[in-house]
Length: 179
Image (cartoon, rainbow, N blue to C red; front, side):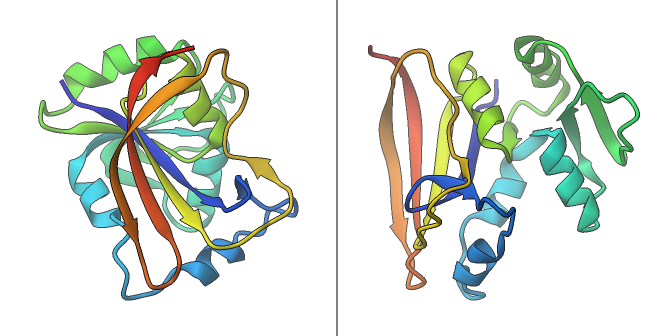
């Protein structure tokens, strides 16, 4: 069965969003001629799982609905969804058990956006791979990459790529608890 992977862009001091919510720091850091793996992510993804806030942000930018099934975690049953988008408010293990047999065997599940969502997947032992794009900026505060995790997790570095823009991509395999 497919891998469950996720990742986020993070400032050097560990934030995924500034205190004001401004994301220009991320857009300003990215260079047009650098491939950060977005196309490869799209090719390998058989389903997306995202939080409601990330979904709302994507919808506001015109990204409502995709050919790839998208599962939005929300208790708000009135949340407007697009084509091939499904709301889920139950246990994440149940959701993963429902998604895996519904996508092609060679495809993976992408956990997209939200430090708390990534944290929940890690805490439940559901995340297999974690990608981190370290952006060369210090925000000084904001939304932290991770929430509280009950025990520390060991990671194995699979890839490290740096770009002229200063962005560094780190890809890890989660190897389990060691604490």
